[in-house]
Image (cartoon, rainbow, N blue to C red; front, side, top):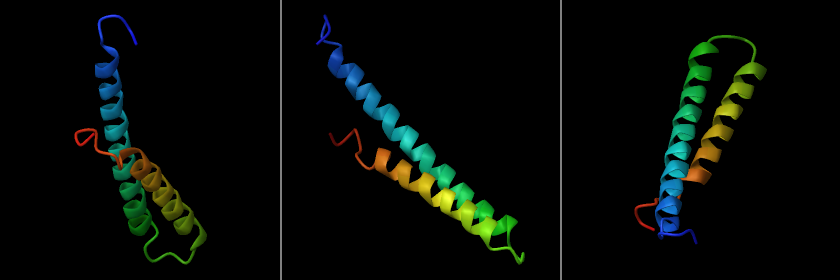
Length: 74
């Protein structure tokens, strides 16, 4: 523990940073999946669309893992 008792406040701040970074990753994942649907709509190539959609899903999942615990609730 650091002098002055600021360790708890710093830990709380890091939880909030992790939470909002996770939320940002979730949004990025949703944007990637949406962009894949729009960009590859009507094309005959499925592999690039599946790759971008899979990447978006993976980014969303990573964000969900980081943001699933709300720091406000403890």
